[in-house]
Length: 391
Image 1 (cartoon, rainbow, N blue to C red):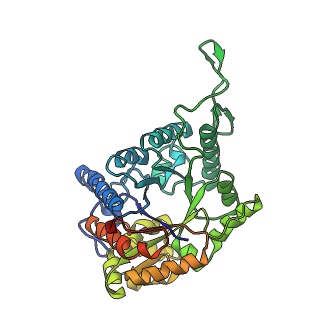
Image 2: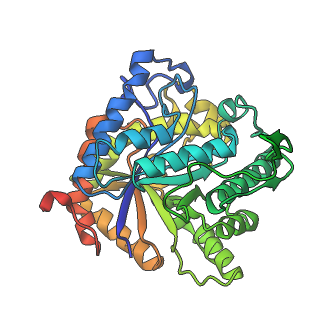
Image 3: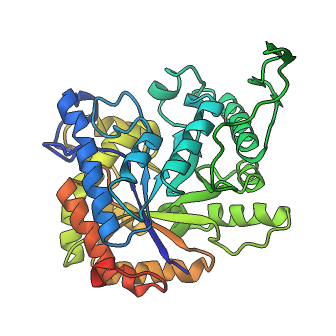
C-alpha cells in the first residue's frame, strides 16, 4: 500500500523562458550567479517538503551543465546541509554516479553523511547517461558493456567496505589494498573509516533496461529500484522482472515491493488548465532529454526538430497528452490523481513508495505550490500518510 511520498529535484534553476519557442537547450549559458541560485531554491523545496510531511527528497548528481538543467554536483554534501534545515525529511542520492567516483571515496563520504544526518541520507548508485560527465571523469559510457562491468565491480567494493570489519578486493579494475609495505607489515586488508552507522545500507538504483543481469545484480545486493511511470502503467515488465529476480533466489516479493514508481505531475482545478500549465515544462524536458535518448518513441528527425525553436507539431514531436496516455505524465485535478494512484496501488500490492515529481524547469513557486497541494489533497487518501499541515 502506498504510504511514502517522494519527489526528485534534479537541480534546475528558474529560467526566464520555457517551452519549444524559448531558447534551445544547447544555446542556454547562464552566469555563475544564476547557476548558484539553485542552492537557495533547494533550501526552499526541502523546507516545504518537511512542512507538509513528505518522506524523501531525491537529488541528482550532475556536472558541467552551464545550461542550468541539472546543477547539483555533490549530493552527499547537500544532504548534510539539508539535515540542518529540516528535522525529518530524508535526502535521497538519486543517484551517485558511481563510475565518476573511486568507490572507497564514495563509501567514506556516504558513511560520514549517514552519521552526521543520523540516517536521513539515503544511498543510491547509478551508471550515468551524460557522455560529457562520465567520459570527462575518465570512465566509459559510450561502451555500455564496459560501463556496466566497471559499475558492478565498484558496487561490489562498496558493499564489501560497508559490510566488513576489514576487506580486500582483487578485480579487473581495482586491487584493494595494493600490496605495499606499511608501518612494518605488508598491507593485505583495509577497513573503511568511518563505516555507516546504519547497516545494512539502504541503497537504491534506477531501473531502465530491466535485463535479467541487471535485476539479478540488484537483488544480490538488496538494492531497491526506482521505475518510471510509463513502464509501470504501459506494462508490468520492469516491475515483474524485479520480482522474478527475487524469486530466483528464494525471496517472495509482491509486485511493487522494494520499488518506487515515478510520475511527472501537475495539478490544477481542471484537467485542461493542468495540461496548459504543464506543457512548457514538458517541452523543456523534451529539449533536454530527447538528444540523450530519454524520450521514448521519438525519431531522429523529431529530435532534430526539438533542437530548434517551434515547429514541433509539423515534425510530429509527441505531445504531453501522448505521454499522459502512456502513464508517465499526469496533468489534472487532485481527485483524478488520487484515482490514478489508487489504480497503481491495486495493480502493485507491494508498492509503498510513490515518486511524484514536477517536471524539469518547473519554477520554484510552482513547485512549492504543487508540493503543498499534493500533501493537502492527495496524501491523506492513502493509509499511513497525512499532511503535517493538519496537525
